[in-house]
Image: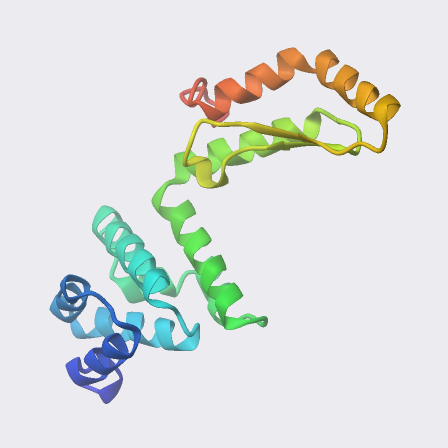
Length: 184
């Protein structure tokens, strides 16, 4: 086995980033190709401990669910685009995690996309921002208003009132209603 995926190289990387022992042991228990692929990715993206743990869990779950080795997952076009792309390593690490979450939770990703499209379709005026929870980790929808003066604020509130039924539907979607629809 090459030094790249060796237990010593993984232990050194994990120690430098204070990877918890149970994760290190799980990592070391993988096959050589899987171990090496994770280390290569972590080094290339200069991952922090939390990013490695999240990526490790997602890769492991995808690998088990799809019966595909980790190098096969990392070789997919949407992942290679991130790994081989330009931009900051931390930014690409975040992109990788987002792409892996989409692979692991495709229904959730489709629901988030549907919600984003519904928000965009509202055509609300500037000054109104409808915010769905990141990765739908809660069922809370936030609405922010930014106005310069009372007249502008009144206009924004009026615009919200006209869109109340659509906003309520978005809140229902965020809460999980309609996720079984064919559109998701």
